[in-house]
Image (tube, rainbow, N blue to C red):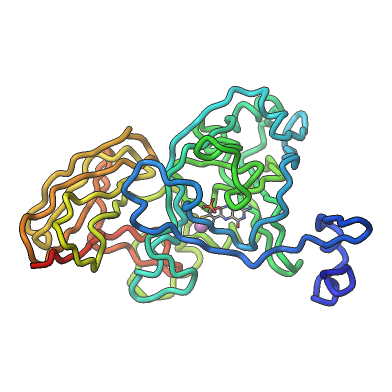
Length: 374
Ligand SMILES: Nc1nc2c(c(=O)[nH]1)N[C@H]1C(S)=C(S)[C@@H](COP(=O)(O)O)O[C@H]1N2
Ligand SMILES: [Mo]
């Protein structure tokens, strides 16, 4: 059992342990400490549908989830006229809205970067598309009022780091993005209350932007006249302002914060390396871009010599994925297919991803090889 004493011996200061929730069992109690973070990827075969089921939706957190507390409120303060606190029930006074959007970790595909970069070695599974339900952050900020000097919205969740020396996952987004009509305080995912892993009771939804902006377990929203300080804004989530030679060090003044997801497509089926008894009927996958709706997906089965336009399925939108379908080559033998997406702003998925020191935003052409048995 974890007692106050051996918890302190584990290296945590009194200031930290006193903020940890207690779970009572009669007169005894446990301190609810943080779990080792779990990074769980979605298997690629689920990218053959418009909505990723919640039980297989990827999970990423830096410190692991805090205690589940559905009554937790979010405090809105800083440069506002009327500081306020809202529980989920309080938020229901605002109009409810549902948005279908891709959530993708900026590090998705990092494991495919060459040369290799350190960090969670995600292949394709750190993404998914869900229906997110909640209220617009802009409606809530109209209620609290925003002072004219505010330029950024700083965001903090209840998942405080295990030791005071470890930086908090404190993030910020510019006010302009915070009041975008698609930026939501969400309490439902795929029609059900958010699960703990995905941020219950409340998380931010920033459609089109990478997952590091989608703060889970929200407790504090602070209007400020500057970006948040600390490691997770000043050092992490940075990409070069312009292309760099792969494998080289990049000076900090040549780096900028990443935001919008680049155009990308991934093939869910056929499966790479699979041996089929019968030819798979079609090539299926997902395509999206954070800049503009997808305009087209092309598929090549001859190593890029020729490309055929795939059929798109699903509603088009910024930061929203559509399915693409293309016929498979006929007959038996070995095959290889590649896909490349283009968005309505003219961005084309590149043959090789732009390398960067943290391996963010991998979006190279995805290729799969399969065999149909003779
Ligand atoms: N409070 C909090 N919010 C967080 C994180 C975190 O560690 N703590 N991780 C972020 C990152 S990096 C990603 S990619 C997404 C992942 O969301 P998911 O676990 O629901 O898929 O949550 C974001 N929100
Ligand atoms: Mo992430």
